Image (tube, rainbow, N blue to C red):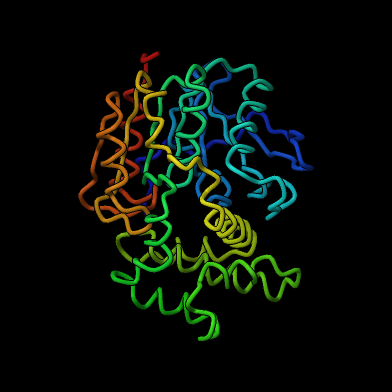
Length: 316
């Protein structure tokens, strides 16, 4: 799809690997203006990893763009590891990275699971957050997980039939459990096949209009394994969130300004979550994109995201 409204392609000016707890090692990079205002990109999944295109949501002359791959994802090591991989671990990792880079406050930019992690981090460390730009809001509630695993078949019956049909008929009563068993099987022939089936399902449902490019990206082995294995692990454990959920602690970030961008026809993270979050967060503004689904790279979504980031210029 054309991406002319994104900022020009740039490379990082600094990259590194940062040791974390539990034997994990984080890949991180910085791009843009070394003296600019820090913005932290939080990728989705969990487990999807970040890519070069994600630098392009930010004006490189103004922003100090910090991107990292979360535990088990992307270029972080070991790929697909579930050991010591929870939401509190990821929140602590952001603090490790922030201190390593000597950043006082970040503007947080996250979509899908990235919005979940942004909220979790902001609620834990509100003094370290200058603002939030969130897209395709996912609050990690059981109803949202249930929608992804089953409800979405109301709109994407063919994709869901392929997703469920990957499994023997006797195991389709528990899609999550059956997939998690395969995704954690040590045999690559078993876990990679399951990862591709899971990721292709997600990629197929991520855009308003069919996007072979998106599905192809999701189906690559490295992307698929991190995404599917870690996502299933988190889903099976309630996203490692407190019982009261993220809406239960919105008061902790009441003073933090936020821009929420949501595709009206987002089938991965339905619009009700973004709406409920905006209603609960007095400093949040919701932009509902009328002609978009879930993907950050859909034309209306990416234009709204760039506009939202631009509105944070000068806002401290």
